[in-house]
Length: 178
Image (cartoon, rainbow, N blue to C red):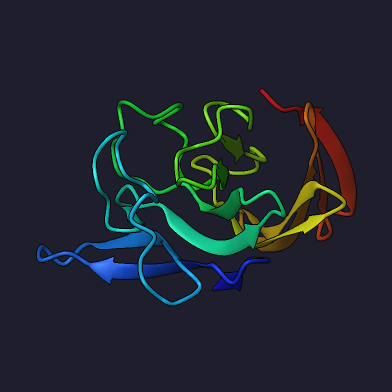
């Protein structure tokens, strides 16, 4: 849960569907605690104030920018999503930015999301635990696994470059953010 400057609340949680599968939920409440019905709603239609996430994605970090944009971070899941970018990349760090209305921010990464694959394992086993904002930059803390070693991951995203540090291996690297 994060609280905005006007008292609005953005929350991240989970729910289990009737079929037993858990899904992450991103929601927005007004300062008085009622759902923000414009959040996540299709254009021209009423909404519930909550966005159901694709099955399999795990989100752990939540941050609210001063302009109302919402940043979430976690791990790309293993459900098939043919309409999403790079559906074959699972077990990688997932960072998304949403506009204040809940839609993905097209100016962030590719279609509103950035995937970070450290390519240490096949299949990858990387994920974000938390996200924070510092000076307008998105900073992610998480983990990276290679063989039997677990490492700490730190990534700072800029408009065109991701700089990460793997503390276990003691390496520092950067690559272009598509």
